[in-house]
Image (cartoon, rainbow, N blue to C red):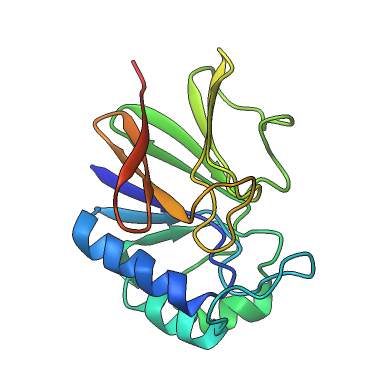
Length: 181
C-alpha cells in the first residue's frame, strides 16, 4: 500500500492544487490529511490564493481516498463543506506492517505522545516543520506544511511505501528518506 501524507493546507487553493497534481503523479492508495485543511488560523498569515471553498471542492474530488484528522484550526463548520469525515482527533492505521497513530499535533505530539504500543509511528502536522526522530519506543514523523512551511523548510508532503518514508517538495523531488526496519 502506498500512502501519501500532507498537513496544514490552511485554505490555500494554490497549494491544494499542487498537492492534487502531486497525488495524480504519486498515485497513492490513500491520502492522509493531518488537519488544518481550510482555515488559516489567527497566528498565520493568509496563505497563497486563500480560498476555503475552492479547497473543499478540490479535496472533494478525492473523497473516497482521503482519511483526515481534525487540526486545531478545523471546526464543525468546516465539516459541513467537506464531503469526507475530518472531526476525529486521531486515526489508527496499519500500513505495510507499521502501526500509524495519525493526529494533528496540538493534542498529542512528540513531547506529549499519546498512550500507544511500542513501535508505533506517531504522525503529526501542526508544527509546519518536516521531522523524523526515533525515540526508541516510537518513531516521530512530521511531513511539514503543504502551504505555510516554517523554520526554513519548503512546502511539501510525505510518501510511505514499503516501510520507507520519503519527504518531497511540491514538485515531487525527494529530499529525505527514512526506512523503518
